[in-house]
Amino acid sequence: MNPTFMIAIPLLTAFLLFVLPKRRWLNTLFITLVALFTSVYSIAGLFNIEKSMSFGMGGWPTPFGINLVVDNLSAFFVMVTQLSFLLTIFALFGWYRAERYSGALMMTFLAAVNGMILTGDLFNLFVFMEIASVSLFALLNLRESSGSLKATFNYMVLNALASSVYLIGIALVYRATGTLNMADLSQKWGVISEASATTVFLMLLTPLLLKAEIFPLNLWAPRIYGRSSAGITTLLAGMVAPAGFYAMIRLFSLLSSSGTTQNSLLILAVLTMVIGEVVALTRKSLREMLGFSSVAGMGVLLMAALSNAMEGALFHLFNLALAKVVMFLSVELLTAGGRDDLESLKGTYKRNPAMAFVFASGAFSVAGLPLFAGFRSKLIILSDMMKAEHYIITAVFIFASIVEFFYYTRAVQHIFSSNEEIAGGRQCSHPLSTLVLLAAAIFIIFTGIYPESVMALAEKAQMALTDVGAYVASVLGGM
Image 1 (cartoon, one colour):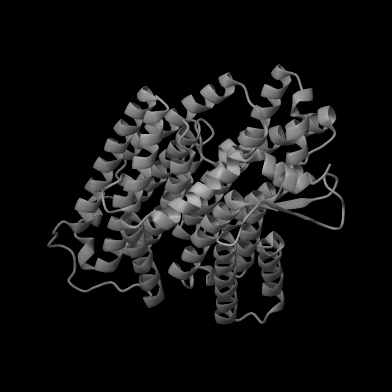
Image 2 (tube, rainbow, N blue to C red):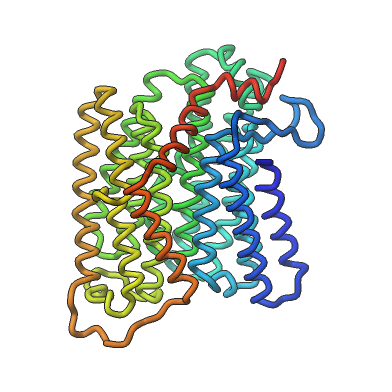
């Protein structure tokens, strides 16, 4: 897989959207075909990667030039983000036609997220993060409302502060080591004193913790999840958060950090999980419930990654991204963009039984019910944490899972409960939306019953993460 295509093709598409005739159906078809091509290309490439590969840009030698790195870990995350994007485009067929520039913004956003995952340079990681953020801010404001504008402003301020901290951090890194190439930096990290290395490392993690929705830098997330359209929330849950998580674990693998730093982040991860699940339990709005649940899910991933359960974390990330995208989209179609409080959802399965089934499939997977994909990934995380003797964290994880099971079961019960006030006529979604989401729901069940393929990909990704020598060798070569 040539990583250049995963960035260049979406950027070229964004440019061409301003050149093509202003016909919405043509733009829609063009974007859909590009999303389909890049998704198929990323999946095909994932199955053909045998070793880590570095691609230099502009003919400059490493570590002086820009380089993109592909291994089983980065390819796994690109696959997750591509599938999330493709599912959003197909399921919300016609949503991005509502505004003139939304298609170009979404393509720019896709290129930036892929760049965050594929880059091998700290400064270019900053550039791609900023491009993704600006694109997302613009998309958030396409449908203006007082609630969404306020949430967007809060996110912009926090993002600007976090980016400033990161930029100062990479300036300190360059001053101390003379490089920003991640592979080269891993070889020179030891020249920085332990106290300075800890401070700089935390500075580099600041915007990544923000994007991965880790407490206390996640206060913006629930409000945006609750007040934005499904087209935005799926991009956050299925693309931004996974990309931030990827950058974090990549830095953890390449740059050594103190035990105190890892323990502190583990505490933050547990707090993110517990607070997210408990607050989700108190929410009456289904979108807000999903928002806090998404935040809690990212806490689960970081907690598992720091508790020697990385393979389970990667498998769970795949399941979470797919399930959350499915649930946000099905809620949008189930409620027709209207009220989403639990009482108003009673009996809505009569209006749209297909979307009710889709939501239930995603909810049961995230909650970890048997026969669904989330059950397998949670079981692996539990097993790995028990082997590592993290008994207290395991107990907290079980508690959080019980809370999650309770509020998702309650939501599904409301949707499938009988309500005589619900009109008899059925509400039909776009046929393509219905077909795609039903296929995704069936895939969630299929993965729960036959998880071997995804588990094998997660295992290869975990091995690529721990094989730092192979990553460094692919980038620096004989240096």
